[in-house]
Length: 81
Image (cartoon, rainbow, N blue to C red; front, side, top):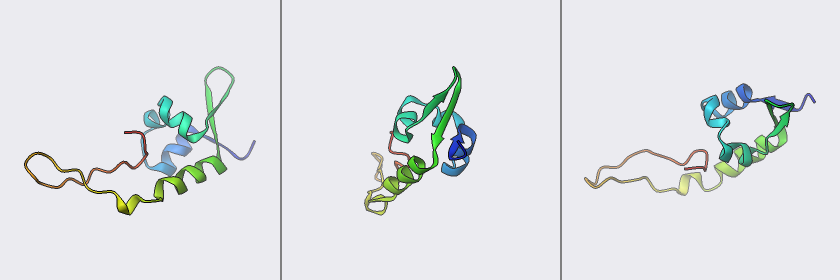
């Protein structure tokens, strides 16, 4: 069980909020599993695979532009938006 990570650990690794990690889309993307009724855990190997998938093609993404033509640095970092 030492390979299992808590929500807090995953949020720290991904540099995001714990509430984002708990969303259904992220739980599915990260391959979460439940411990009891409330505990959520993640396999370290699946988290590493998720990070590797997220980096593929990251530099190829084009910036989002608004109607005024100015460029924004918004990115699809976690692949859920």
